[in-house]
Length: 327
Image (tube, rainbow, N blue to C red; front, side, top):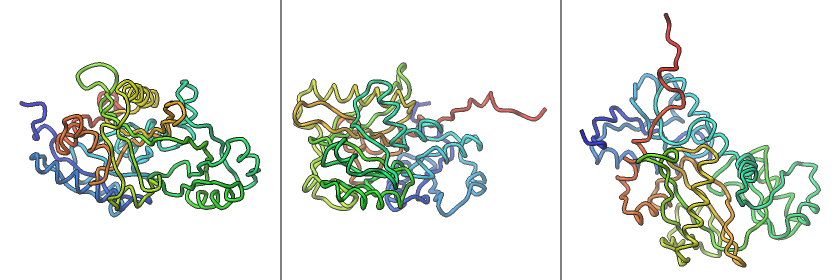
């Protein structure tokens, strides 16, 4: 049988919706994935984790699932742990890598420990000396929740007096809030597909995208609902610089233990073209405005090809033979 014979996948659940602040986007992503799989003959079914509990999920007897959830309770390791317990192979990173990648503070600490460039940062608290933070990191700077995505709760601070309000906006969403050095330059993003470093399915970086948003404001509306943002793929950068960024993103993906697929965001500093890693998304968007499908098309992969390739990597952290069975 062909490696991509739809029958090999069995009954597939497309997990979408969920309970995070990104529920609306997840529903759009999930329905796109569902349609693509059905068009390829896969026995795929929608499953909204925000409307159904784990007992209902277990009762569906899915052979594998495609995680099209974004944010908490879907991208942060919690769902991955439940799927490990149920023994249902799933797409994307495992429990630990998902939890680490969702937490911007921990992601940055690992990247720094591995010698990878990421903007300087500090964690904010109610009793933080905000003036000292502004002096240390410089202005402007970025304030954001540690465990949210899609720029939710993010503020670009241009004056020290704005820091307290920015902190309060972010802390309403997450008790862990970070202030990050602002890197002036081009915003890039690079998807990664694959598992590990060896074999036919080894992880590989897809083409670089340069994001040109109105007024340099790539916010929630410009990401998902407006058509004013330009996505340049390939970007107007030298081939050698694009390859440098791709290598950096691939290493960032591997040191966190990611697998299956992800997308990393990078700032390219204007004054010297040095790339800085911002964050990595282990369950990226798959909407009509989403970046992974744009990059995949530039690499010769249609949306349907991309979805099927990701589904083919569905797996579990725990090998089935290692599971305890009653005697």
